[in-house]
Image (cartoon, rainbow, N blue to C red; front, side, top):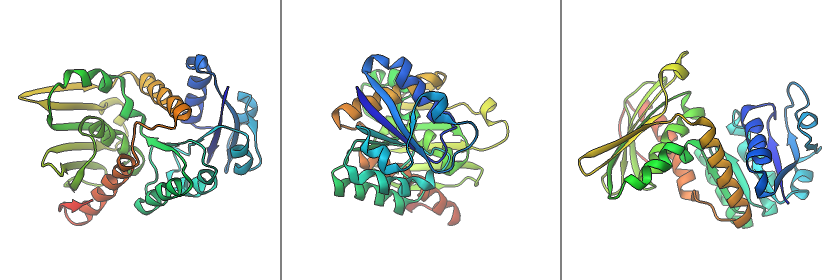
Length: 282
């Protein structure tokens, strides 16, 4: 049995509940179990008691009692560095939820800590593993010349999901970004070092869940392949399948370069808007 520990800001959140269910039920045959957890700011009912997970009084005690760690805090991404500073020195495979950090400096520090201690890490949006994206890939039999993704949400908390769809198609190697949108309606051009480009639109509004589903597309030759993300449970399940493989092998399908590039794109978008939509180099 591979033992997993959760480290979080507050465990009563959608990701902690969803990941626990998928690991214990859908992936029960993988023989993995969340056995310990710690949270800095408990809220609501006792999550650990409700889910049969041992509550530890410190991160250190979680780390010492498990084989692999999951640093969650999906709604408190700025806490990731402080949490990782207490987790990564142990050298155990660590999943960092959604985004390394909203701070590019903190994201680099997390990667440096992992490298310093020889700790395997993986960090990704679940949309990077969307069922529809994985189904599209076999159709893309030649070079993708351009791509786009549209989605919704607050930029530094949710923008990563839409950007991850482009990364899943185009890979790494972004050289510069220009954002001519507004703080609530992002419109990015992303240019790669080889000259290819992608566009990303992310809108934040009251009815966004109803009117702005995640849509993405890739152009191969003179044909565009386009899909809408509909299987929400599917991308979370794929994310947890990836996490389990990572915990068992120490091999991440998402490189540190890609994880850092996600943060770099979000950061460059902000700087571009501050500069009136000018191109900003990553």
